[in-house]
Image 1 (cartoon, rainbow, N blue to C red):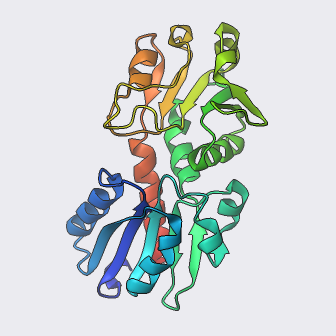
Image 2 (cartoon, rainbow, N blue to C red):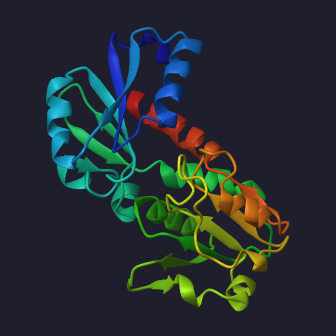
Image 3 (cartoon, helix red, strand yellow):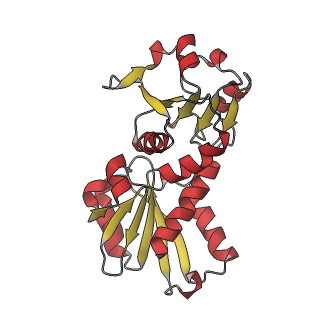
Length: 251
């Protein structure tokens, strides 16, 4: 029973420059609405990942953490255990801390993304372009595998198994019907930024999915929408992953 929680349980978010964060508001609103007294949520803004053990030491009532950019991969060496899916993905966005102080990493991003994308899918949505190669893009790739959708990464820096932006053309858009922005380009306050792709090749047959939720409609989504693409931002994905994380922390 969630209402039989121990008193003064602390949860939080670790990341860098996270004052804008979705999680803190979401969870504190949830605690209030569901009358979960004794539950608190805080942001832990870390300038470097090596500050993580100090957070654990100084907060003995910490029971769960969300992890955001740029620490989804860097956090792994600091954990005692990894959930099987997090291990396969190679990125963690959710951490459970037991009363005995054991720290286990999970990935709920892939679950949130999969659940958010699924209702948009039609039979012609066979292949996806994943813009970016960070921790979030790994979770997206894992979700696409689960959905039976082939994918290719796109990267600005030369990476094995990733396409360079300059090679994306009309044929690419014919072959890939789902374009997913996993880069931070377009996030508040730099709302005028967008991934460097040829937006004129979007059609109504395409899905443009942006993991960004602030602003609600990024430049990436606006430009795709202008060509009648189906668009979706990252808000619902975040809600799904947050609720999944809450279940993990309290099971």
